[in-house]
Length: 103
Image (cartoon, rainbow, N blue to C red; front, side, top):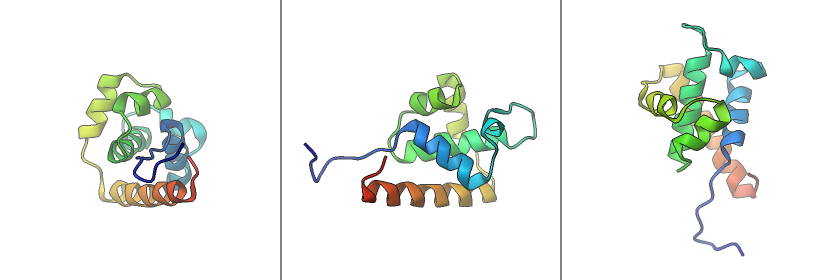
């Protein structure tokens, strides 16, 4: 039974999917561990957007295939200006999906 006051959260997997879509990544690029690559910043965006929605870092970390301690480090990472803009776009898409009843 749905309550009007219920807090809806996107699934960690959906957050990762939207990050991949918005950043225009190939599926495997978000898992890329090369220094200087897009992977670490994309993972940081996913973890930080998830935290904004109340998704546990460990849950988003699981969806990314990373250790909870790594997810915590990514949550504290300062995002670049372009990553911050991407995070805002991702957040807006997730809010729109939740309002439509999608997850």
